[in-house]
Image 1: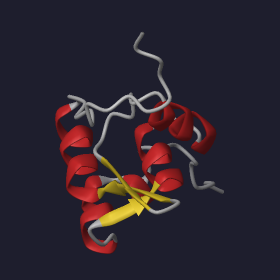
Image 2: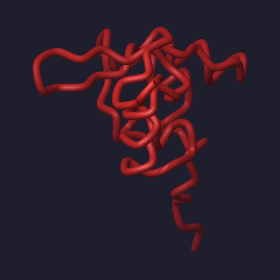
Image 3: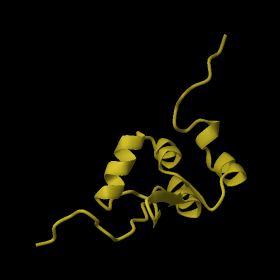
Image 4: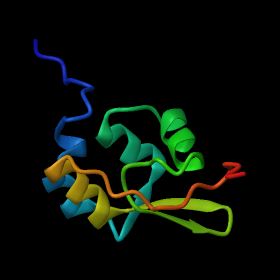
Length: 90
């Protein structure tokens, strides 16, 4: 009996599935899993301004731009926001 793999590259997180089922933005948890790391690591990268996709902050909500996620998944080249919230630059 074959068990379904929980690999990030599985069908649920494939670019084809994301294109077909996600709206303009996705959750940090789902985007993180698609990229191969945990939700906690995703939020840590966002806090440091190093999440590999474009991120929108809407009030207290954080969403990942689906088009950016797809470009990163397909090219392997990160698209940083260019903002480093929470960092002291002095």
